[in-house]
Amino acid sequence: MDRNSNAYTFLFAVIMVAVVASALAFAATSLQPAQAENVKQEKMQNILSTVGVETSRDSAEMLFNKYIVEQVALDNNGQEKDGVNAFTVDLKKELKRPVEEQAFPLYVADVEGTKYYVVPLRGKGLWDAIWGYVALKDDINTIKGVVFDHKGETPGLGAEITQGWFKKRFEDEKIMDEAGNFIGVSVAKGYQGGDNKDDNAVDAISGATITGDGVTDMISERLKNYLPYFKSQTNVKMASN
Image (cartoon, rainbow, N blue to C red; front, side):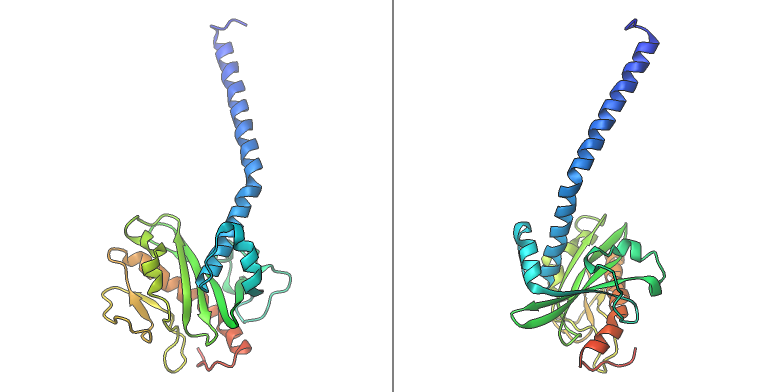
């Protein structure tokens, strides 16, 4: 074939596209198991972090199996859903379904004889999704720890929700008022409460009001669906919400 012809150029381009596409497809397929394992280990690290257990990815599964003593998927009435693996529940997909059809995963941790309940979170930030985990102490009222992450929040503003200084503001905050009514924890702009842990609020990040509101909403929206289960499983006094 004449190398200076249009037909040769077209055929050469088609062959190159096919070769490159095949190479990329092979690479993507080959890397999928490693990517899935990394996602799994990162998820375990995040859950453990909320209960004060820090770990590397290499030891995440070992420590997860040691400290997470129960995993259940609930419905919004607090009943366990048969045949649903809590760890594989995808909240992104669940949130697209009616609440009565959703699965609500819950992790129960036992750390040195102290029980914690870890609830996955997912909501909306300024630009895209935000997510995380919140761990409650066994009074089902006090926050042990939180982890937040995001897809596209602004560096230096909304993206600061991942930072330790912001997550620390939630430690020992209460999710209920004195009467046992579920309130959640508000990320409040202009907060003047200092270290008050009983006002159901923490100080917001300057310039990240919408992202802070997203954190407030996802904590409230997710946790309220676990109240029926907590009421049935604990002796903790709660008001009817």
